[in-house]
Length: 257
Image (cartoon, rainbow, N blue to C red; front, side, top):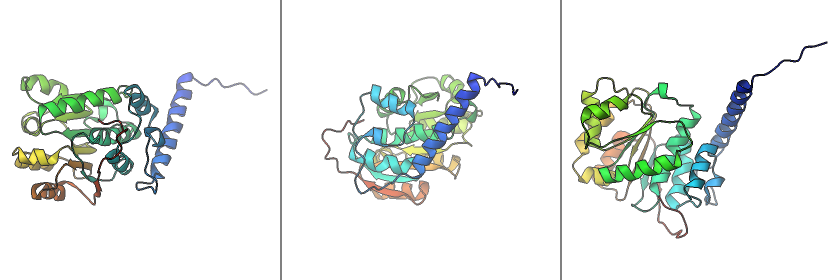
């Protein structure tokens, strides 16, 4: 008589997680980045349960125009140059791909920094971070703010443990130059939010220097309300074969962030 083999519950959970991840990856691979009928609900997108629950609990249901265009393309690891103004919902247009792409790579604390989000001002960086905390609450990633206002040493002690950083350009470059243990070799994604404001505030040289520090093999998402020459120069420096997206928001019922 054959002997029954007892399978440990952890093994069952690991197998179930692997199957779910494989199914999710297949759904992303078959996703239409420019469907004939635009996606209108977050539930229509191939997102992890952790992200879907975070969206639901944060009362995000309906996609804005920029979200419907950017998220499918970004989920497939494409670079993006998006024209989108403040209030268009662009924050979720880049935060969801950040969470999902790291999730599908099974990113852990041992992998180091996976995504860097650059914002022109401390106030905007804080807003982005708050949305990240809400939507990403069910993921296991560590996330931090690097915006100055605190001693450099206090930020330095936390950097090596972060998977996702939201930062202002000046402070970020300061750490790259002065924090020896700050490791960015594994970086997967760079987000440049409100790139036109970053340029207008005189950070062009700073951002150029930051990009020089980063690995060449990465995904970059750049959002800007206006397409100035400086933004075009930055796009040429930072993007590879990007998707060009422009959103004219007309979905008044969409939930923006």
